[in-house]
Image (cartoon, rainbow, N blue to C red; front, side, top):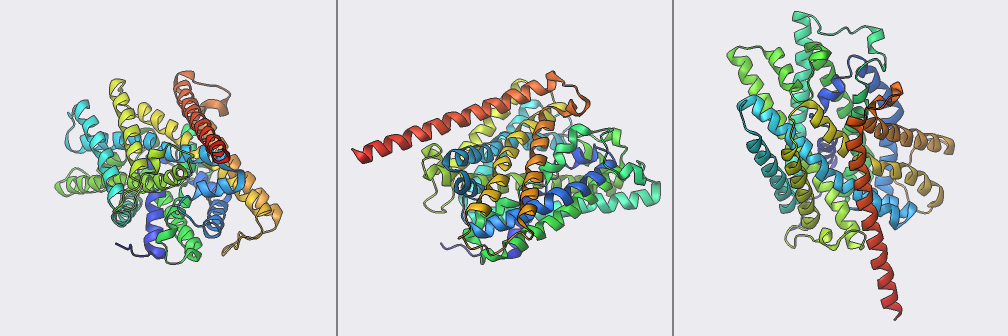
Length: 463
């Protein structure tokens, strides 16, 4: 069956669902009122050039490989394999954190005494439900992500508007002075890289170019999603900070606690808390569906080239979906969830450690993507570029350096959040660092295997 081609709106919603994450909104609010200043600064110096670069790369080099294709064209197969490995495997590492948060919020809303075993069962069921959705059809997957994108807009809008209404009637829970709004390292510095994480993923829509009506519409898709995302993040953060004192904002319970403050303890208030809590839970599922769809497609493209294990290249004969890559993602997530069950300590610190680990892996491909943009800009002058980043060459170089530096700083802060104060908490940092190093090592083993297979193929061809 031939799939319908998609225009700007459904693709922007797909991108919005991938980038807009409700689960880390409380992390940005935990920085305090200065997070508003940080949002504004990051949007200007990072997100704007990131969106421009993504638009040019997506429209100039359309294809389901996305970031994998760009890095491969710029730096060759070895760096492309590393890129795809990080881009793909981080979803399997991130999914447990998201679904553990899902189970925790579900328990808080409906079953405070829910056992750890039951929460783990929920996480595993959600993991394989996500794999199933991504396996059956691109159309259905996009429909779910579009629906969940709308739900994200609803829940964050409620937090934003509700915060203003609450403040008008009860006063603000935190000081919103000009000095307080300015970027500061005074508190919550460990959550600063979450702001960068929250704004990554606009290039994921590049993996959907076969489903686009016109690839020249890519810049409109990207910047429509960026505009809505930026507004909603800031509005949601402000709403939470107007309702809850910063010291009372929990990473897991923060959204539900905010809803309880906004709507009160009456019958209608409790109904709204439950209804919007359910909406929030649905958005977690939508987020994992969108990222699994995009990252698995990139992995399948690499596997077809012999750069990842052949099983990752397996596609559905009926739906042409990357069932092999999706299944491996589900297996990795399940393994991590079971490990979590064995060493469970159900608190915000554990959730943040898992999130920080997966986020480091997630951000690594961008350390290759931005230099790839500049390399292609300088060396590949023949490829038509329906959209070009404006500015002279020095502007292109400056944007590349700034974007690369911000990603690098975010990775360092995820692992060593206290480094800005010239100290390191090894009890927190060592497990994350070891996990990242192991992930890198596995990628290098896969790279060595791919090169060995390629050399053997050359020898056989010559013989």
